[in-house]
Image (cartoon, rainbow, N blue to C red; front, side, top):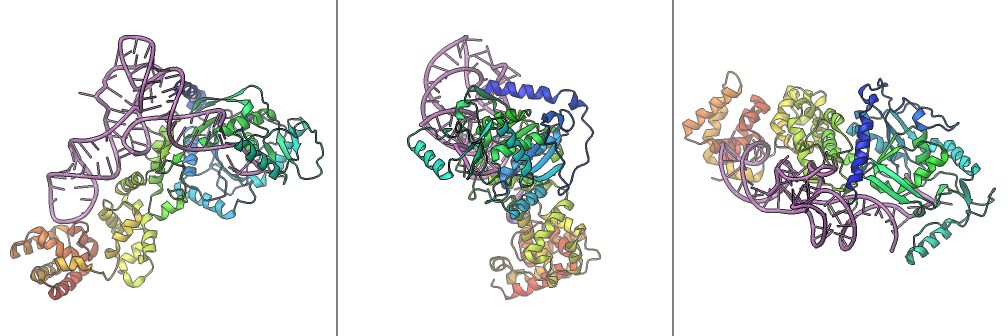
Amino acid sequence: MGDGGSRNRAAASYKQRGESAPERTPPPRQPRRRSGERPTKFPGEPLLFSDQVGTMSEVRVRFAPSPTGYLHIGGVRTALFNWLFARHEHGKFILRIEDTDQSRSTEEAIHAILDGMKWVGLDWDEGPFRQTERMDLYRQHAMKLLERQQAYWCICSAEELEARRKDALAKGLAPKYDGRCRTRGITDPTGEAALRFMASQEGQTVIEDLIKGQVVFDNSVVDDLIILRSNGYPTYNFSVVVDDALMGITHVIRGDDHLTNTPRQIPIFRALGYAVPRFGHLPMILGSDKTRLSKRHGATSILVYRDMGYLPEAMINYLVRLGWSYGDQEIFSVAELIEKFDFEHVQKSSAVFNPDKLLWVNAEYIKHSEPKRVATLLIPYLAKAGFGDERKYKEEAIEMELSGKPGEWMEKLVVAFRERSKTLVEMAAAAAPYVQREIVIEEEAAKKYLTPSIVPALTKLADGLASLSEFSHAAMEKAFKHVLEERGLKMGQLAQPVRVALTGRAASPGIFEVMDLLGRDRTVARLRQGVERARAGRP
RNA sequence: GUCCCCAUCGUCUAGCCUGGCCUAGGACGUCGGCCUUUCAAGCCGGCAACACGGGUUCAAAUCCCGUUGGGGACGCCA
């Protein structure tokens, strides 16, 4: 395992921080800032240490997606761990959109990110900030470095650079910038020029990572990276540092694909005179073939999971267990997660995304959540399945339930199906015979169960149910038993034909539950229709 | 190629720091059974892992070294 000990040292020192005085007397919580509010102003000059921003030792973390695509599983998990940590520490969770890549960022992606975050319930305290609105800040800081001779102009063209890189790679050499503009002393470039950070080649950069433990890099592996493109836009490694510093970020929690960026960023924090935050690098999520998660595994937009009928809380629960654990516990409420989350139990190795387990977690939530909650969530799926707005298919009473707030009937529906639905989409499909006025009887089922021999029993049952003084569970059961005895049938012999007549299907919730959901009128009517069908059927 | 990270059932993981309680625990999936008005759900049980090789030690999944394997980074992407 190589470095287990040092990881634990890091964890231990983190723990001490966590248990220090401010933890016991958390600063009063500021009212949550809603998205869309004006960004908080951060001092640009003079340069301050990040500890001076906000309450001393308040935890400040951020999620910083780039709007070049949708928000996927991996992004949500990174956001989640940041959010959980912030909430656990009574700190702040900041949302920042890293849109400095003009050519690839889209408005649409920003909206998708925001919608995704809202759907899973990860609310942010500050932001969303957009880096393109903070250009002056990056340029000011870049110029500061230029003045201090910690940055220099580079006139190598992108094409030249690319060619040299390929060449080096082909020769088996490290493809790093050779620093040829470093000593050119260009003070006032006339043509296209990029600004490079002058990175020391001496010594080492040591990271005490919250998750990985101590990681050491020789500074000689880091080259002079470009901080300002020739178009004047900052590059990622520069804008993150400026923003993390100005926003007072205390803990940078991100995917471990950023681990090797850390030794590039730390010297920039130092050159700028800012405190270096703590880092925590989360293991990646892989697809079933153990390669990086991509479209074919599940790196589709998180909102696709909503459309597939997953509950946001199930999503959160599944994702948090991908890399974090609390003994043998599998199911956690969000409140519990906030209470229990820590970095000591975050796995160091990558995890494979397992759709089967996600489905199981979702089923658990469907089974154990308040029926009212599930019913509320279910309504849009019923609507999407076509039961929401086609008046002719619905009974009046049910229409009320479907139109807005779910009532008793919807809750009963949920209770009837929560143990047989793994997603809300499944539940909506299963609910069809109960919300429709007319049902379609499956051919197979009719052939097997609606035969002439069952006609007398079915007729008797319909009559019996029709004459009941009250349509209670006990009463209908009594009527049912009566027919059973009279006709000398076993439960299954009558229940199946009844089930098919009532729902059109050979599988359903308990037969009395079905009758209860349908109500007396529809139950009797469908039984009579079933009788007709059975009469015409083959023995 | 160079640098960095990682390594317990098919998958997610507990255990590792503080070696013995591990004949390695739980969960998903899978297989078998029970229950049963169908379908589910539930319950019971089975299969299934410490990557390999060296050390250290009375004792190693746990500590050390190496090997192998996997992943990541090396952009005027983020």
